Image (cartoon, rainbow, N blue to C red; front, side, top):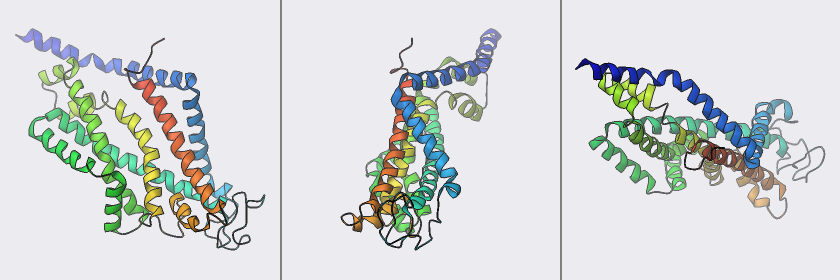
Length: 304
């Protein structure tokens, strides 16, 4: 009667050395996909440019983002002011660069918070099943029944207009996607031999969840996080545009577009360049996310 337990234990320890090989295989597929898909590589290059420019923004921006009167009011783009100036004579190029730091930070915080909360909830829901799973899924259905922008706007407005409350509102509506993705993956993974063997030999539940199921279920969550990065930037810009996000003089991209909309006909550059910055950032994350999906999704992967 001890033989099955010993065999189960052997199966339980087998995947441990194989994980490094699996990890190398994953990164190999990602690199190969980026090389074979020009759009994914282009998206990655654009994304790296955004990151470098925002990190070095204090050295690249020729003027302080709050400094008024650095040029004529509503001056068109020139060599001295590549993106022109706004109605306070502030340099729009400097404000867009510094605003990129804010927008990328919003995306990062939203993805980390929503992804972490949603993944843990989905992990527990899929593993235990039963009434826990039923309650969690009905709660996610309630959140998904309301459009993301509307619910985020309601939360941010109720808490008070600010970029911090906008982040809370966006994270509060995006965790459901991660919960459903993680739950779906765990429902499959928990029936695999390594998970069944771990439970048979008495491995603690938390180890099964976080050392075995989570590392083998993160792939769809990783792809969604890449796509959600751009979505979070877009939602934050939308909240700022309607006045529920960043407040003046914070140069968040959505707030810059909102402040420049009244000059669309007379000074098109005030709103156009921040809008193009949003477009480029969201596009780059979507391109990289699509490439990751093609590399990691077994249904879309074509082995050479």
